Image (cartoon, rainbow, N blue to C red; front, top):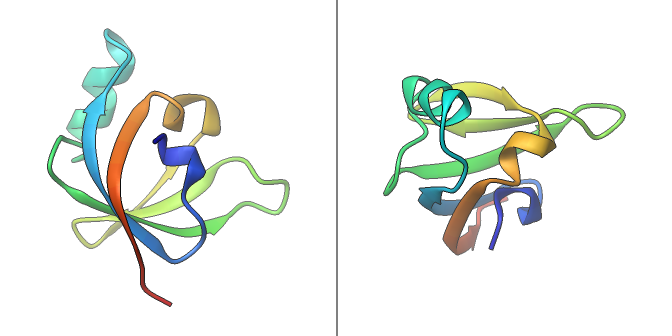
Length: 78
């Protein structure tokens, strides 16, 4: 399952970041690593980017980049 498939308020565990290179380095520098819990907080008015909560910090990620993040164990928390 991809990070873009989360619905607002859902949490999931990050499995891996699929794309290598600068994007992966940038995402891991922001705390997006395997095993971390991530929650979709909200979408931008036009749907892109999306705001996620990870380690207590809000991070905006473009859908194009979020499509390279694989997740599992989706849990609703509304």
